[in-house]
Length: 409
Image 1: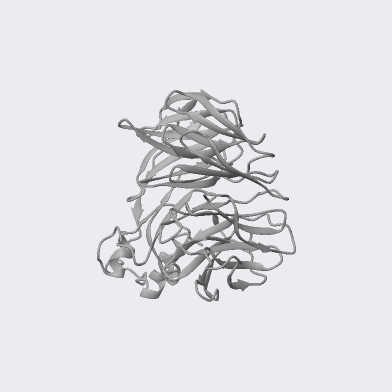
Image 2 (image 1 turned 90 degrees about the vertical axis):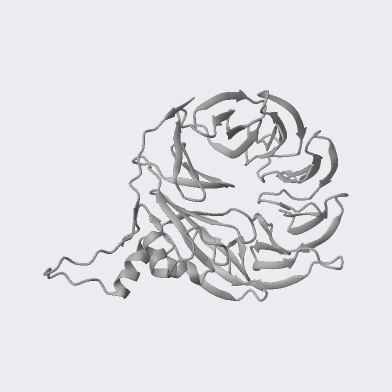
C-alpha cells in the first residue's frame, strides 16, 4: 500500500536586484554574479557548456530527515526519482514541475524496476519490488493495485505490450501480465539474473551469473537460442537488434549475432570482467580491470575485435554520447568526464562531489539527469538541442533557469 506525502516546492529563479539607492552595499560584479549562479547548480551553466550541455532546470525534491535520493529514472515526457525511504516522485520533463509524490508504507522492500505503461487511455507507473508489482495511477500517483508474483525481481524490468519482463535471484525470467495482474510465463536461466533484460523490437535477451545467455520472443516467451559461457554476466548488456554485447567472468567481451547467437567477435582480457558494456552509436565502451576504458568498433568488418582506443588506468562508466564526445561517470570519485569520441583524449573533467547519480535519457544526444543525496534534481540538454528557454541572451537565460535547493558553498 502507498500513502500520500504532502509536499510543497518554493520555486524561484536566480535574480540579482540592484542595491537600494543610498545603500552602502556594493552591487555584485558580473564575475561575482557568475560565481553565484555557478554554485547554485549541481553542474553550473559554465561547466555544462564545456561538456557540450546546457542547463534546462534544477529543482528541489523534498527528502525526509535521514533519507537521501538514490535513483533517477527518465520516462520520456516525465522523470521519476526514488529516495532511500521509498518515496517516489514524478516530474514533467519539459518544465520540472512536480506531478505527484508517494511513499510506500513498506520501507523494507527494494524497488528494482520503474516502468511506464500507456494503454487504453491509461497512464500507469509500474514498480517491481522484492515481493510484488505495484501499479500507480500515472496522473496522481494513487495506487491502482498490487499484483502477486512467483519470481522475485533482482534487476530492472522491461515492458512489452501487456508484459512486464524481469529477472530473478533464482534465474527465472518472468513474464507478468500486468493488465490481468497475474504471472504469465517463465524461462529458467542458470544462476541469478543481475543484468537487466534488454528489449529490441519483438525480442528480449537476458544473461545470468551462471553464464546463460538467452534470446526470446517477447510476445510468446519462446526461446530462440541459448549460449552457455564459462563465466557469469554481472554488468549490464547491450542489444541493438543486430547484435548482443556483454562482458563475462570468463575474461571475454563478446559480440553475438542476435539471430543465431553465434560469436561475431570476442576480446580476451587478463582478469574477470564484472563491468557493464555501453553501446553509444557505433562504438562499444567497456571498463576493463587491467586495461582501463576501452572503445571498440561495435560492428567491425571482420571477425576480430577492433579497438579504437584505450585509456589505461582510467576506470569509469560511459553513459552517453554528446556531439563528438563520450561522457563518463565515476561513481567513486564523483567525476563527469568528456572524452573525444575518435581518440579517447580527455576534453574536460568536472568534479561533482554532491552528485549521487547520473542518468541519460537515451544513449546518443539525450538529456542528462543529476541528483544529489539531499534532494536536488538537475536536467541538462545537449547544447545543439533547442532550449526550452527559447532564444534568449545568456544573461536572460541564467535569470530564467529554475533553481531550487541552491548549491551554495
